Picture 1 (cartoon, rainbow, N blue to C red):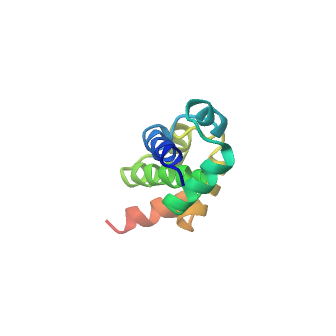
Picture 2: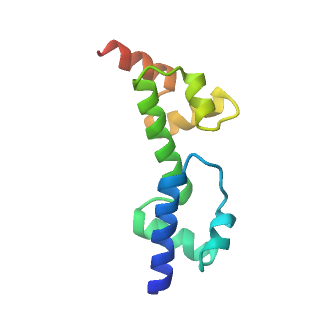
Length: 112
């Protein structure tokens, strides 16, 4: 992979890490960085081992997990992370952690 593409992918990774809660689209990133969509998607997965969407979801759900562990309610967490419904948040959480956020928060609270 050419150095300019590698640098663009690493800058996009940095941008995502610092802005994953905010809404943005891949096309918005492509407008800011000199790289094609297919090269970005392929290169990101090659360098970081997962797709951009999965990476962003995993970051969001790690934040959700921390919020649940600190006592926040599921609905509050879902709104904070920009989900329109608690159900869509619960599906995303389960995709990453294998359990619903309600089940997770109950289990977490019981283990203390």
